[in-house]
Image (cartoon, rainbow over all chains, first blue to last red; front, side, top):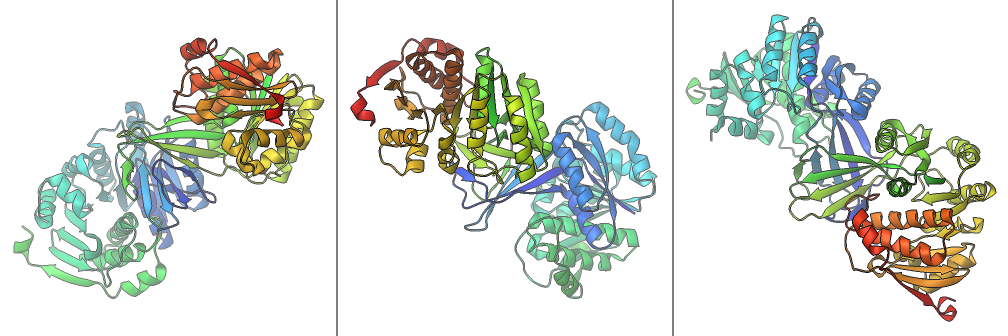
Length: 311
Length: 311
C-alpha cells in the first residue's frame, strides 16, 4: 500500500475568463472548476488511475478543507487527512480563453499549530503501518518546522516503508539527514537548494547529505537518476510541452509504484518518463493520457552514465 | 427594521501579490482577506455601523455559503440567509502591492433551483413582516427568473414595507411593474438598461414603467433624484476617488434609513451623498470613514431642478 502525504493540501480552482486584463473587472464564465490538489493528492490520483489506490493524508481545515475532502470522496480517493483549525489554502489558475494561457495564484496555506503538528506526528505511525511506500510531496504549510519531513521519513522507515520526497528549499535540505530513499526535485529546485550550477554535482550533494537516490526532473529532457547502483539519463520519446506540475507528480507516482513493486531502476525510470510525458498534455495535475502512456512505455531512451560523470 | 436581500451573496476575497504578471505564477502574500459580501450585505454592514441593525437574507450554499454565514456572525449581522444546494460564489480582488491597483474576478454564483426559489418566495412574507424598509440589491443568481425582484417587491409592499432596489439590466427592468419606492442605478447601468443617452430622460423612463422615485449615482458628480415631489441634484463637498462599489452601497443604506425614518427627500439626499462620499476612500465595500461622514453631512450642495428638465 502507498500513502501520500500532502501537508499543504489545496483546493485547486480554475477560472476561465475571456482574456486577463490587469486592473480590469472579469466575469468568470461558467462554473469555476474545483478539485482537491496539492502534489501528494495529484500523486494519489495518478496511482488510482493506474489501479493502485493510495491513502491520502496531510492536513485539511475549515470550509476549504471540507471541499477538499468532499472532492477526494467524489474521486474515490481514500481520505486520511487530519483536521486543523485554520482554513486550507486554494490555488487559483486563471485561464484566458483568448490565448489559453494560465495565470496562477498560490495562497500560503493553513497555519498548523505546534499542538496540531505534534498530534499528526503521534498519529503518523498508525497511518503508515501497512505502507510499502510513503510519498511526501510539496511545500510545508506555515507553522511547521523546516525539518518536518525528516520526522515523517524516520517514522516511515521505522514502519518498514520506503520513502519518496518531492519538495524544495529548506524543506528538502532539512529532510536529507533522515535518509529518504528517493528525492525528486526538478532541476531548478535542485540548483536553487544546493547553490550549484551543475545538476549532476547538485544531485551528488543531496546524496552526500543523506538521500539514497536522487531523481531530477528536467522537463522535456527527461530524468537524471543518481543512485547507489548507477546513474542514468532517461529521455522521453517526444518533446512535449504543457503542464510541468502534472508531469512531476506523475513521475513521483511512477517512482512510488516502482519502489513498491521492487522494480529495477531501469524499469522504474522508463515508467517514470513515460508517465510524466503522458501527463504533460493534460491541463490538470493528477491526470495523464492513458493511450500516450501505453505508447511511450516502450520508447524511453535510457543511457547509463559513467561513474566519473556523477561524482 | 430594515431587511436587506442579497440573492447572489458572495464571499469577497482579496489577494495581495507583489505585482500582477499575466501568465505568471504568484505567491499570495499573507493570509487572503475574506468577508461576506454582495451589495445587500454591504448595505447591512453600513446600517449596522450607523447603529441600525438590519436583517440579511438571500441565498447561501455549500462551503462558501458557510464561510459567508460565519463572517456575518463574526460581524454581528443578523443572518436570515436561506440554504441552497449549490456552492455560493466568490468575488476575488487581486491587489498589486507595487501600484495598489486591483483586478477583479466575479464568479457567476450558486444556481438556484425552481423549488429553492419557490421556497424562498413562500418564506419571504414572514422575513419582512416587521420590516419598515426592504432593500433588494445586486445581480440575480443563475436559475432565477428575471422578474424575481418583482415578486419580492410586491410581497414587501403587502407587508407594509417600502422598497429600495439596486440592480441592473433585465433584473431592474422586469422589477419596475411591481412599483419599487426607490430604484438606485448608477448612471452607466441606467443608460445601458434604458438605451438612452441622457440620464434625466432615462430616469423618467424608469418612473414611467413603475418606479416611484429614481436616484441615480453619478460618481464624483453626486446624485440625481427624480421623485413625485421634485427633482434634485445633490453634489458632494469634495471630489474623491476610490471605491465606487462601496459608495453605491453606502448610498443605498442612507436611502433605506431615510425612508425608514420618514425624512424629507432633501434630508435623505444630503445624507446619501455624505455617506457615499465617506465610503469612497475605503477599500472594502461596506466600510465608511465616520469622521468624513460627520464632516460631509453639513456640506452637501442640493440643487432643486426645474420640472421641465426632468420630463
